[in-house]
Image (tube, rainbow, N blue to C red; front, side, top):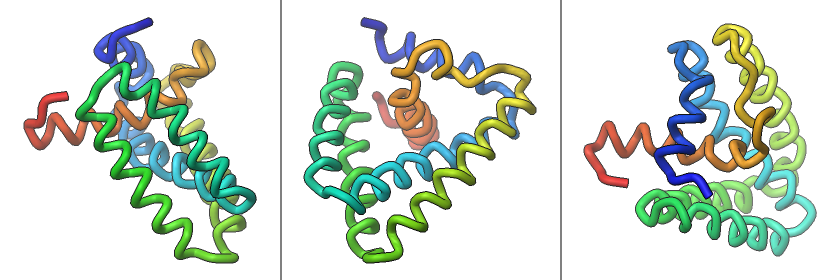
Amino acid sequence: MRSLNEWLEAYAESHQNPTNKMIHWVCVPAIMFSIIGIIWSFSTTAVFVIMAITMIFYLMLSLPLSLAIIGVYAAMAFVADAMGESLLMVSIAIFVVSWILQFVGHKVEGKKPSFFEDIQFLLVGPLWCLSFLFGKWNLRF
């Protein structure tokens, strides 16, 4: 399995353009929330099972980033629960708009999305965003 740095470097290869980076810093968490929201609308149990499974991947790469992801998951679950009946439609809208923006970002970048090469890059995106924040805050990951 690749190390965290290998994953982040590979992901960063197709995320160099400042516009594409900005789009991803907004849209990756938005897509993450929308997926949680869509699944939450049908089964909260399924959401927590998926979160637990993804945490295995994250824990194998970085404990500090995994702990941050737990915080992100908790915040997103709190918001999802608070949204009530509007959650599904809002989540679908966020999902569609965010993916359109992601593809616009990759058009600007001139490179195809990383997940076309390896589906695991869909899990790396949130780590990439968090690693940027950790770097800004001088936190080791």
